[in-house]
Image 1 (cartoon, rainbow, N blue to C red):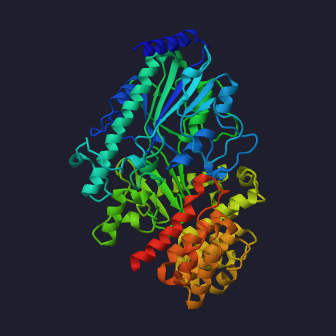
Image 2 (cartoon, one colour):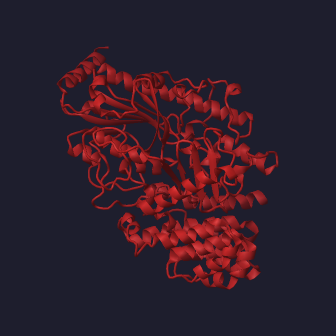
Length: 619
């Protein structure tokens, strides 16, 4: 008791000496949870501490994490930029930032703030210089100098995907009462996972309560602006990793004490709810704006409160790139009612096999039931290939299962959101349309952002035009795709080959000679896609040459990790019979490269293990 008394007394002394006229700012974050909270009207949830905070401040109904998975989402937060233009959209990319682009704590610290992060970083961009005053599990605002304003992050991991599937776990929430989304099958495993998810949210809420109590006990509640938010949608499959509203909508509660109410926006009020569209790309500029700092021009978000508040936005944007060991490219945009999704690789199933995701019981039973033919739409959709476009009414269809793209009465909003998404790609100069290996090779050890902004090195309009043709699926575009295989730009050739692969046997047959020439393309990425197309739809000779090509590009120590991932994905897609001649060789491929960032080390290994697992299952 004596220790606690002395500790609190010391903190109160610091608080009494702190009167800089600038607010302290506290961010409390939680992992892998959507707005499944009492304050959002979820009667199944038990979240008294966050609910109380919401009653004292404003709750945001339309907040997006910009990315539906952790590392890209944190990259968005720390930079105030879209990772898609930084070459950082893919999981664990680890790219460099330009010399004149800094993570937001740089500006806060320069302005006199004490900045702490407790404790996860996990960005897709490399840190340079000193970012945080302290970043560890011991980082705390209490360690600042007397009178110094602070910015502090406390990140809670108890609601993470890994925590909703760990067993044994004695359920507190009654699984019989949980709401099952329309896309999930109603099984005991699914109900258990959802109930355990809510149990973890309750545990997370208690940790938030401790953060808030500590601040109040220190006498700092009246001097501190508080944000509580989740880092992306729930860890359940078809939420986390997918740029639906279920994967991107997060809870956001903001409390501004009365003495700093002048920094609030017009939509802020006590016990308030705001339908303003905000997203993670807006958080860094908003934070700087609250601290009285003008956000740098390169930040692409918009401050939604503070001295430099921007005009409310009409749209929010989301994205999906490579998720762990599987490639994909999806872009999404929403207004206050509708969500539009553009799938640039619609030939890939939603539920591509991801080692980490398949550890969840819901994923396993869901896939097993699909394979057994025991499901019907919309529960089947996740295991099937995607349409090129999707449109959902978020008011009428909370689970986003009724695609309105072909609805006559929704063509106007479809055209509006399609155009908004297209304009955003061009405005930020989205680098996602360049194969990941070429993002790194063109950057040559520098910052990929510089490539994205260079129209000579990265002719985005032309590349995007080919990607649009490729992903449209229109059969009358085959000749344009075949011509694209001769383009001088390797990214255009990549999308041309991809478009032929997407169209299947007829298109590949028509383009056979050109695709065979592409097996010797100067771009290894183009070689991979051409080989996959010929391996999937070619004759016996094509299959043999395609498999040999893909195998030859699967050595991460020789060809690089991104080419190896792409090539192994192709081999895995072709199946056991076609890959049989090189299966033993695949087993001998190197699994790791000690020069790689440790977070990238497992992806090649997972793909090789998956190919071997499928072989064992057939036996």
